[in-house]
Image: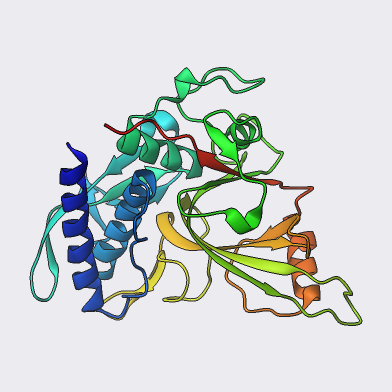
Length: 302
């Protein structure tokens, strides 16, 4: 497909989803303008699932067993990524096929790279690792740190849409699930400065990033706020899912923009002590679980 055809198809899809969601209560989740192709495809999956979930299409019976359309936990060989098709009517979409996802964070990113660019990680050498079809989060971090397939981004102020964030948990290094977490950045929303007090004299900058990922734990505990996996359906029922979605991650730095750690879930805390506690009590410091940020070296486009 030529670039012009891709752009037309993308515009039609975005306008259709936006129209359908705007008719409900959840128009706050929208597509990133001029997104690189891997980010667009990730958002297409996440927001396609979000839309069909809102209208009550949560799963289906397969061989007598109920299977959710959005799942988390598949190994690379068992990943499921299927893009749905629908016709938009005045009130709701009518689905010919459904969006389906069964991935973990690392292979979700790999699948989006494959869909977007036919990316093949077996052509890249990860220092100290054997060749792999899909890096886990620890391996994505090593790729970024060694500028293999990526240019490492060290200035957090320059992080932008399409960049990849990889957190290395430094545990279970061979595990797809427990080695860490990998996300695609949707937006850099800037930072606010925390308030010091008698308990914590440090001052932090708390950076807010819109992200798209596959996770077993949504990035918010409140429905209809910051994560598309926790929503109120059109029927009025609430629903929480694992798998693909969009959310918000907070990266905590000092005033020189050196990363100190992160906050996984949405928070409105303003005092420094809250972020010290979040990082230390959850093991989310840069020492315990370092974040690496990389910008893909994209293949030449025809």
